[in-house]
Image 1 (tube, protein in one colour):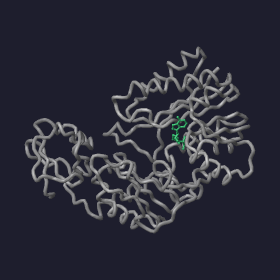
Image 2: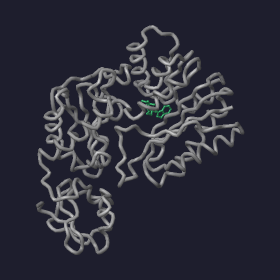
Image 3: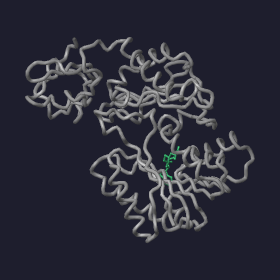
Image 4: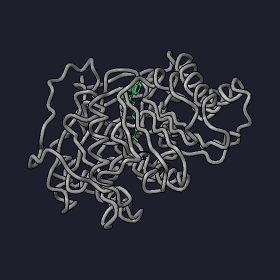
Length: 393
Ligand code: SAH
């Protein structure tokens, strides 16, 4: 069906037969047709059986699979995938409800669209491509979004920071539909300004919704430190949950200004909240010991396997200071969003930090990403967010 064909070496079709959506370059015997990066290719076994159709890539992942059946990747393909994903978010009561309009619509492999992320904030969708194939398909994807989801009338494409650097593409970030700059979105009844143009990622961290709700439950009467606060997500839940005071800290001055704006949106004039632009380690070193609820949600410490050791050291050091300083009876919410750090490794780093402090620590909850960031059962690598809620005596 497609001009170019990827032929695998003998016995290298096993993972595709088990629906794993990547073809590694080492599995390839021959590529017929000289595909450009991002082009659609058909994948065949050594015996000549059709296995998959996907986007060709240069690098260790050579093909990202879009379908295991020989179908046309056309407008109706994109519409169908988006329709299925949207129906799931509606059934999760994240879309089409009054108290929430912030959700991840497409989570890459988890929604059978490897290399594509789409986050929705009220009437705006932000598309983020992680592969050249998705970059080339961006207009078709935007058309499908527009056709399938009536409430979406503003579509922004933001991929400059996520496309493979070696592909050397022009920066194409910009509006594919309309051009409204900022949206006020709702998450579990709380309001947030989302600035996808200047903000980090797609503008907001959609993946902490459920963990923020759990924090709300624990925050009554507590003194809360929200470290790595970004736009302040956890802080507003803590305030709504009845915290005595909430301190939000981030090294980015822009993040602190967004946090302050969001406090004003939800709790105008509320003096329980203060925000500080500071480095995490500096702040933790100099702070006192009067917090009894601490959130540590740092950026990914490891983006590649070869820096895993350093990353684990980083998690250990960070958590060690929190264990040392948190008040007796305190609750620690600690996270890692590094995909290459496994649940076991993260737990081990936190365990070492706890042991170092000598405190009695109990695991109350083990957290992960919410259902709008689904993990494709055939692609366990998709599980990236790990969190622990700990009771520190
Ligand atoms: N908890 C946030 C998301 C955190 S993202 C939420 O719920 O939305 C990680 C944040 O860490 C970013 O905002 C980044 O600016 C901040 N950051 C990175 N390095 C830091 C450092 N050394 N000290 C403090 N903040 C840092």
